[in-house]
Length: 349
Image 1 (spheres, rainbow, N blue to C red):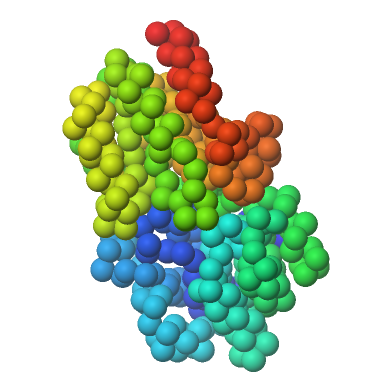
Image 2 (cartoon, one colour):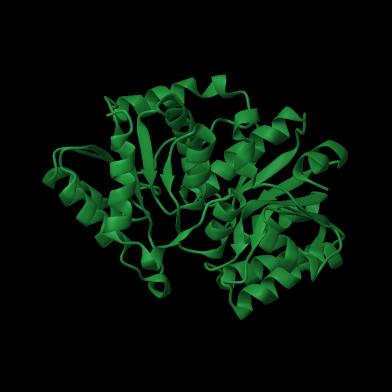
């Protein structure tokens, strides 16, 4: 059963929607915006969204008409689970490289909700990867045994969850459904971005990512090398989190914008579908260098060329599904990136 089948055939009224929402990560906020819109389009009215920072919801999202509760408020979360029938886990590579103790506790809550409270648990467009730890595998087992249906977003996730459950099917990541939405409602979000970023000719869109200490790599140094070698080109440097979440990253991109006058710097403080429309509108003038899973999907959907960088199995799975050979981030050189840039500028410039 794929995502569309779940939305069409299952009674999802009185659901709690849970994900990594509210932390200001572009991919997670994109997943929430798309999934909430899909639920609304199916006439599902009674949904409670768990969100890390409810006061900041409208920075990244349109008013959904759904209730919000603070994710960290454990008493409120448990009361909400108790009075609802379903738990929807809405996308993300939860059981992968970035797994932590909170994911284990979350998976334990799913297990208890299913087997002690009789709730229906749906894992929608989720990821479970071989790159995860023992804690991640234990967490995935708990979640898999809790689920009525699992919609895996790629082949590796499908294979891993098939060892746990028979009710698993492969589909795409939730973000691929963005073009199916009524995007006319997001024109004001596009206008907001166009007020922040100017496009006048071919432009490189480069994103930074905040890596954990165990994922240390030379990506930022490669980017800095590219900036020094491409002072004649228009470049946007984007942080895919708000500046308060990654102050060091924001300081870095602001310093680059001061040093190099051809650079525009921006953090993530807008509706994620606004960026999709921005990429769509300027697709023939943009090229992407960025390792994030969901910025790659955004570029692909909009027809923007991108350098296929992979920092984790989930990104490799995505690229391979598109028939593209990934470049492991640890092997990425400034030369690789420069060849991509030269190809982009060499075509019709």
